[in-house]
Length: 456
Ligand code: GLN
Image (cartoon, rainbow, N blue to C red; front, side, top):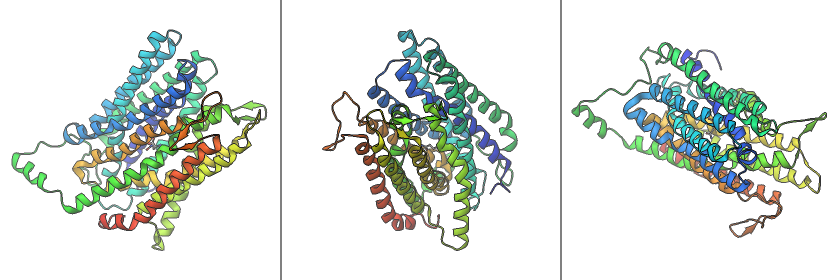
């Protein structure tokens, strides 16, 4: 799988790895920081966290548009990275003065704002550059995105281990060291990208990629505006429909940072041989599983392809949703162990994260690659942003759903007329949601494939 890919892929791999290190390092601490340093309550924390992770994926619409129209990918990535680094350092300062809430809270919001803006420029552009390293129709694109996805997850794996260990010590004064490490990670990403981009970012025939679009003459502009064919429109429609289904995936998957973190921190037995594992370390399970199982799935798809039985991309995504549903089923069963003074074994969470990761691998790298294949070149980054828009909606929704987490001493939450009286009820919500979305998508795959006009 690793052989015969352009060097540019490994540059994008390293850049994105450090950027994700920064993003996830910060994210592993965020909810804990809000609760234990800033004294926000759980409902407010869950909602704010949802809004933040939602906006992080909304801003790519602006970043994608500006890149396709004016700046090109490279400059957008540099600007985005600088903004994100500034945001992490603002959080470092917020963590340094956490006892003075009047100063810490505004600094905290300012940091989040900078990261939101920065991600908008960074994420859609780096993601769309991966596919541009290859010619249209190059069969290596799926593998390229899978390798890139491993880079993402190498960063996300190291992040909670480093930033979580430095920041989540039980002493609120230490959060800042986690944020500082996240800021340094972002600077490493910028350094790698800034110094090597000239050399390695080009197509197989040597044409540089990611530069600002050429200015068109009036005549050229007219031609370009007319050239969206029905095929283009059909394919863009497919991107829209799939992005909609993906909302249900991420809004359940992203419980990792909220309700599943509450579960891990309060109701899970985290001791092994007398040592207690920090809650934030659970955030590393997903990336570890990605690193271990991405090659396995790539092999599987490859061997199915040789027998001409490889499922098309929309089918893989539907399978992803069903696996996610199965993961929540495991946890809905596991929480039944919890009682007075009895905590749940952490093996339930491990099994759940494994199933969630298999689902993610069926849906996420496949989706990135598919968007690249379906999008007309001049809207490549903007349509990548549409794909991430599903994450925006999903993260916002995830925050709302997490608000239904039942807690002692609070009236029982009611979801669409259904009283959530315990944790098992709460997690069953996600079993049902992901299952229904997966089943409906499975029914639609035929129609979608027709509209993809030959792309798989
Ligand atoms: N973990 C992946 C990333 O950070 C996917 C996240 C997402 O699309 N929600 O890129």
